[in-house]
Image (cartoon, rainbow, N blue to C red; front, side):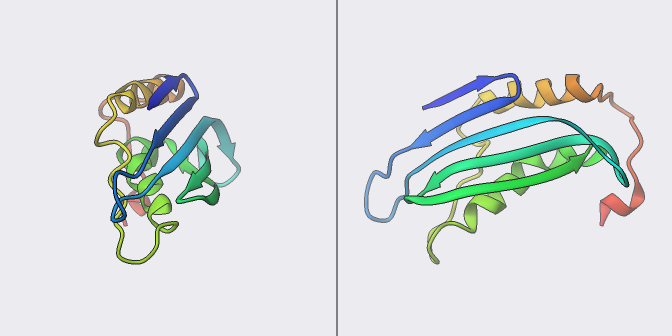
Length: 122
């Protein structure tokens, strides 16, 4: 199950066998201003993975958010799985991330060719 509303994504997955895993996650996001980094998106991923509570917050600047938000969210989710299990990319099975991408792009007024800070490329 997956649902999208501007500023919020809810995804749920039930394990199919003992090698699989379950999760139910909400990803909330909103425009925020960091005093040092400037404008960006504040994310909060909360819910559960394999019955383990999840509550992660992170901020990505305007020039980091669109190329990175799914990989960072997936990496954070991976840290909740037992060793040996691999978390799929959160974006792979859900077209709702296209809507999320476009929503973030509109909220931050991101345009092709916008500058990227060189220190964010490292």
